[in-house]
Length: 236
Image (cartoon, rainbow, N blue to C red):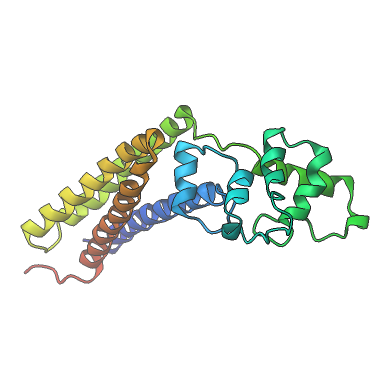
């Protein structure tokens, strides 16, 4: 095979891997913080796909230690968070809520001193705090359908291109069958679990497992294809 052909195929492999990583990055940033906490967790993904039963402020009132809220000395003080959320996050109760959240993981106050805050600063504090008082809705069927369509197009191109190069490799036929069938199975299972997770959050766990296995499968196909292009000795 000519050097130009090798470069063309290698570029295709690099682009496939880059698109996959960008997609995973978009998923990370799209889900991060859904439960009010910065590090991404299974809870974030579950909320994005299935929605939440309670707003973040209600969860924080029930489990203040998870959000590093120092419980006020007076009993029932944290119930103000639930009440503020139930009342529709009125502006007149904002200062009391901010005081309760001070120093916690849900502290959304700006670094500007109170006497120097502009109208825009206060508006941003209210917007970010009010968002914690809203019940998180699941992703819409239209958005989920669009994302699934993009995923299927990408997988068809990636699996077809990498697969064709993989089957030309010097690996044993049984190994080829194992990786091709396994990768295809994971690729088909991911969108199925995605839609099932919208109805029942328990499917988030197999979705994450299949996504991990699919990533490993695509990585193996790509690495074997690159090795065969540049390092395998030509048959004589």
